[in-house]
Amino acid sequence: MSGGAPQVHGGGATAVGGRARNEDAFIAEAPVFVVADGMGGHLAGAEAAAAAMAAFHPLIGAPAVVPADVDRAHLEARRLVARVQAQVGAASGTTLTGAVAVMHDGSPWWMVLNVGDSRTYALDGGVLHQVSVDHSHVQELVDAGRITPEEALVHPDRNLLTRAIGDDIPLMDAWLVPQTPGRRIIVASDGLMKEVEDHEIGELAAMVGEPATAAAALVELAVGRGARDNVTVVVADATSTTTFGADASPWPAWGEVDREDTTPSARRRGRP
Image (cartoon, rainbow, N blue to C red):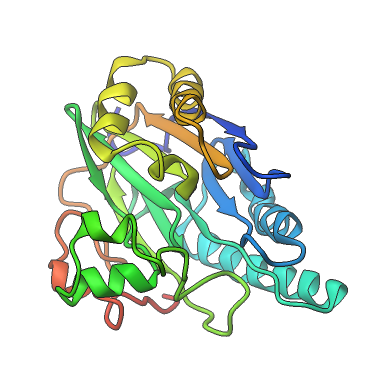
């Protein structure tokens, strides 16, 4: 199928892991596949994550979502999380990442969005690529060449975020990712990446056919390794295909963006 409305499906799974409560939340209903990780150590982290998801619920089942709808949902997530903050009288926040199937320039795309350090990946031919760029202190150190990605995994500041839903920066990162045959989207809270390496995520997700089963298998793998944090995974596939030559502007097309444009200072995208 080429050039028609997005045809997508997926599923998700979550586990409390080593935490006292699950502060993650997710949506895995077409065309919305997103994950929120309530900020650990803050009051109402679970409520903040749930509020962010509530902002995206109106898009579920919508036949023709466009990028502007996703951006409005992101801004509504910020408004709802701010209301949670006011209700609890303390700092509260959440990450937000994932993919929404959208129509743009007459063609179906994945619109990947990100705020924080949960991650969205694309799996192509068994090879996993990270689409989102972590909004974290250690990512900035990696970008600056001061530490390696391996050192970032054990750095004492690895849990320090530079962006979140709940801060005063009303921006998100966003990319349009072409829908292509065999491309699988994987969205996860950082509880998965703390226990499972990227190559393992790709290998397991490539072996399991159904998205919901793949998501559950990844969560089970992390829990089996003694997950210290909540673990949430959403997996989505598309049978629709982005029309060759469709124009991604004003949103950059992932895979065609210079990596220098994804540095912490340059990767912030305003609304179209």
